[in-house]
Image 1 (cartoon, one colour):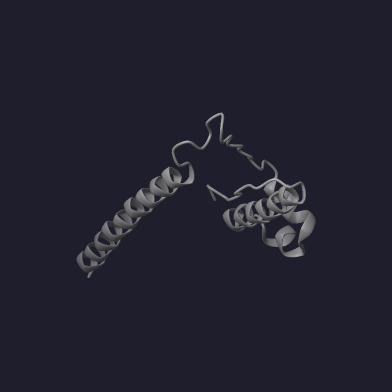
Image 2: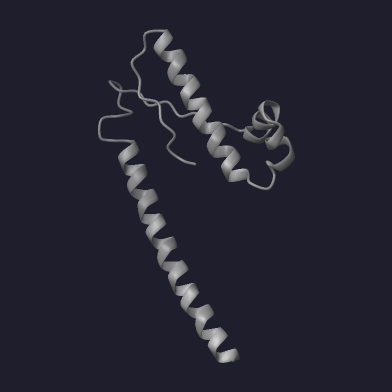
Length: 106
């Protein structure tokens, strides 16, 4: 019985390692795609924004984030990033700036 459990755990570990490797490759491909050649050059400046207080912002906006934000910090950071990107794109458009605003890292 113990041997069966150990074999199952080993099989699950192999599957999880394969998925982790696949996700790492997808992240690397997404990063490479996020900055195509020429972007970030003097002709196409690239601006990076890092949100340092995602938990605080989410807690200010949402009751659920105040109560459960610490349990799902990745989800909170992802949602705050998405909202910040949308607001930034809207404000830039109001100023007549044609820009592509996207969240690169979760």
